[in-house]
Image: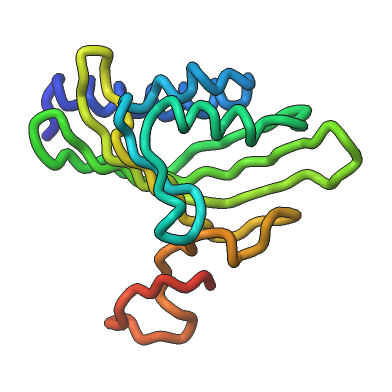
Length: 167
């Protein structure tokens, strides 16, 4: 059974993830990036060159991504928190998000997973590493742009390895 400190840590991690979604939706990229460590790494797209480093670069990326958006709405669920050592955790969560443009383009929707490495700092739990994988999207960049979720192929037997192909 989890002790009080573990429950507080779990809540601190959940609070950080929820704050990130809220701050992105409020178009406050600098504050959303503050949920990450200063030297964080993050990967939102497919390809080795897609790995980026640093909170400042993340804030700039988010600010650019939010240009032309009338509103966004990020919904987070299915948090799986695994403590990997003192002050460290791996967290997998699901996110569905809709992005409404200021012009007449149709809204962009995405169904994805955040794969986060968290560290406990003096400021609380922060994301040190994030990788995003995508189950599907609508009116976006197409599947070639995204790292697919891990999923066993349809029709595979129960002992088959998990593949990296979207289903």
